[in-house]
Amino acid sequence: MLRTRVITALVLIGLLLPCLFYSSQAAWALLVAGFIGIAAWEWGALLGWKATARIGLGATTALLCAGLSLLVPNAIGAGEVFVPAAPWVLLAYGLSAAFWCLAMPFWLKHKWSLQGVGGVLVGAIVLLPTWIAMVQLRSLGAGALLGIFAVVWMADIAAYFSGKAFGKHKLAPSISPGKTREGAIGACVGVVIYGVAVRQIFSLDFMPWALWIGVLVGVTAISIVGDLYESLLKRKAGIKDSSNILPGHGGVLDRIDSLTSTLPIVALVWLIFTRQ
Image 1 (cartoon, helix red, strand yellow):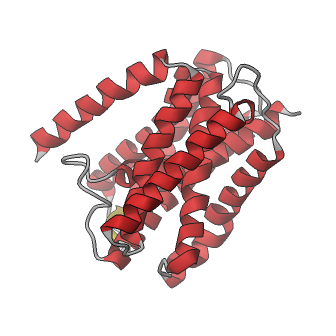
Image 2: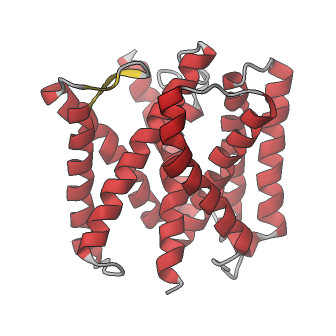
């Protein structure tokens, strides 16, 4: 199992890095559209849909993203002229932020299920802003987007090791029994250390220190919420992984659950500060 996980991880890195650093913005937008289409296909499994309906949902999502990247490329950073203040993009990020920050505490508390049209709309709120953010944030540079990915990876790694070493108190035992409060605290500490180092190395002084630390802690908390949310949905659907498309790792949603909650909020914060 470990060997399979390592091989899959190496293959994913081998595919991600060349695409991230060497593809054009337009090509990147289309590649990520396909990626999100696969995630939408997996979302259909969380809704309990059959194979044909799931394929339709995945294809529709991928085509919608691809269509937007071709019709309004400048609004999402896929064109030659970047227009970061497009109202519909801000609306998408705003809906995402409201969902994760305001609605999600109630969802996790009451353990609601995904049903019907509502489940499709929730999927749109989860996946479409993630696609926009993955394209738009790359306009800052491939290294910048990779650095943002690393925030979530650092949170996962720090949470794992601190949880193993110090974990005694369960964070959400009925949703994800393996997660502990000590692991969550370790994730915050790890991300803050990473964020402080990145700020110093790259002279990122576009916001005050106190706010910078607050954003890092907030993003870490939201990344944990994203992870818990997908765990809840899988429990409700009675499945272990969103799919088996990535041997040893499950599905695309299993790999991007924390990114779906963090990337749109990071992009929204960035747009707010760049407009000042």
